[in-house]
Amino acid sequence: RDIGVNAYDPNTNSYGIITAGHVADSTCSSYCNSSYVSFNNNSNVTALFSGNCDAAFIPFNSNNTFVASSSLHNGNITTCVYDTQPIVSPYMAGIDVVKYGATTERKEGIITSLSTSVTYANNVVINDVIEYDMERAGGDSGAPMGIEYTNGNGLYFMGIHSGGSGTTCYATKLRNIENNLGVVIITAIWH
Image (cartoon, rainbow, N blue to C red; front, side):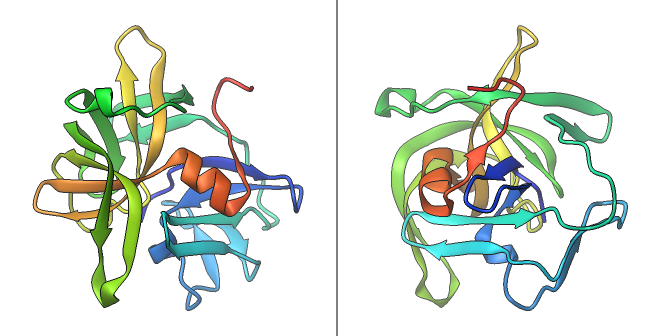
């Protein structure tokens, strides 16, 4: 299970993280990072796994000190969420994208559709998702995906990985996350 990006909820004046909604179910009472440091214990998690959104906002609420970061780390690879890629156009089909998955680490692929629908287990249909061809595995859900520029600007966040089959992957668009969860995605560039 992955963290897609940091976010801010103006309704509750709280900072937290975005991940896939299907991994933030009601059976979890606390969340921790990969070093098992708790950052959320028994607080209100906002999660959606319907419509055009497979995303969850998990607010920070522990006594541990957290520093907001735009860095992404996968093994020896580090980049940053430099900015968002708010415009998604059908003309972007065929462009290169990357995903930073907890299981598969940094993987490269190609966008095949900018707006499609996918049916998950229990007949849950998620609409208006980005489809891309890339290696994937269980545990990558919630991973940030986007366009990674080679000029040092890092990742332009497009959405979070929500699943797939074979090498066909799907991601919930950042605008659908912001619109449905009422949060603001935080990047290294403030708007």
